[in-house]
Image (tube, rainbow, N blue to C red):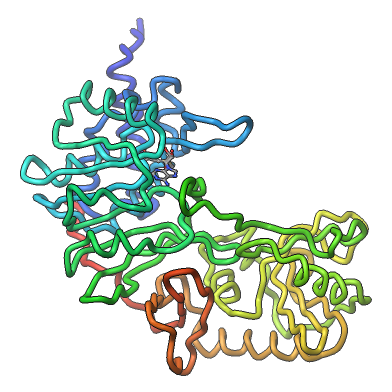
Length: 412
Ligand SMILES: C[S@@+](CC[C@H](N)C(=O)[O-])C[C@H]1O[C@@H](n2cnc3c(N)ncnc32)[C@H](O)[C@@H]1O
């Protein structure tokens, strides 16, 4: 007669299955990371979840503000990708911004071992207390939990070999750069007008240089650097007939009003000389086209919920306010653009698609990112300024395919 396995065996089996899936997806590339995920018991950090949920590849939310989640144990795939980006070594001193359940800190503490340590900071004392209790109960004594605004880092424990930010940030805090050792790596999720990217950066002198980037989704940061980036309605007041929203760093009513005028013109469908079926954000976030378009300063992620409007769902709009023209690619029309006003934006969009062809359809790992502290001088050909934030200006360009930032140890 089959016997029911005990909860410990069930947890071990589910954890092994999750690790196998993370390896299969390519999220785990390094045997030390694999062995660590196979060892650290996630279910003990998220006791509110049943075993299947704790070992499902999903975030487990642990705090809400009304309906909005404000703390979680991050989705394991995303954790693995970011830890791979961080290139942890035994003996590293690590700072984590956003303690959450403490599970990610435990994973890092296991990799850096007894000769290293992890400091994790969270903005809420009750979350810090819970993370500290989880870490103590599971025997991770090389982690220090601190309450504070992670924007300021934890100066009393600096310098760090690695800093990982596990909450969506507006920019790189100067405190993180100051507290990182020269040659150290910082991994941080940043929002670029509709694209959330986990960006790995290396500190070299006073510069930080992009090493790798991966799509991600994160709860936004609270505290000193809380921001209002997101999707804002087009039109001022919001245009009820259009029901269109656009991804912006912050609300800008004058800009939204102008956009309303552009998109209130009649739209015409025009051929784009190709079919982009399957290349869109909604269908394939890892597609290079999503990032290629988002990284261009004149292209905005747009969304329409109108049932009677010219398009429904997600799209990319190349907008030229000087000529009051726009050209939108949407899931609805894989081989056409919706053209508003005149041909100027449409022609620019065709040029952009041609550039994408010439570059051989680069994917996310071909994206090169620079963070400039000083005002940028002349940019190189092919470089675009995608965001000017309060500390850094973010510049992107595309390059030929290269391996990841550090060579992963092969899986044994
Ligand atoms: C996605 S959760 C953390 C995930 C965690 N590292 C894990 O996987 O177990 C993000 C955390 O960041 C915290 N947080 C938000 N803003 C913060 C800030 N300014 N400083 C420190 N922590 C912050 C939240 O309270 C939340 O616990």
